[in-house]
Image (cartoon, rainbow, N blue to C red; front, side):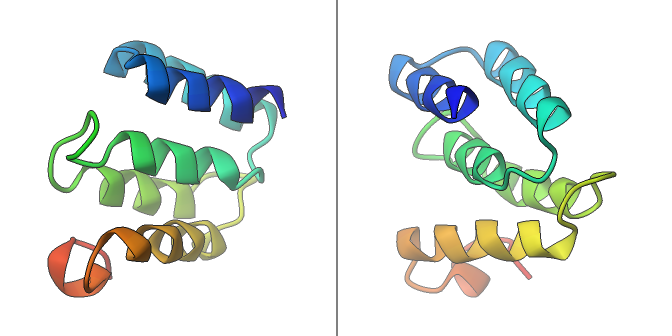
Length: 96
């Protein structure tokens, strides 16, 4: 739960991409199956926050291939979470 709180703080405080990525890597190394880390990273990388178009989609795809992770379940959770931010997440973002 510490990682979840820290990732939320990083978003709210506007941490640099480098610092946030480092925190994310620490979180997934500690617990690769804790899918909340993937959701939080995707949120941080939305264009409305600190990412560029296509960033959160790349992270979601990378999570699907993470050794010891949840595979495509992770990707599906991220896309499902993001669908609340788009009229159609498949048409308005680069989700597949």
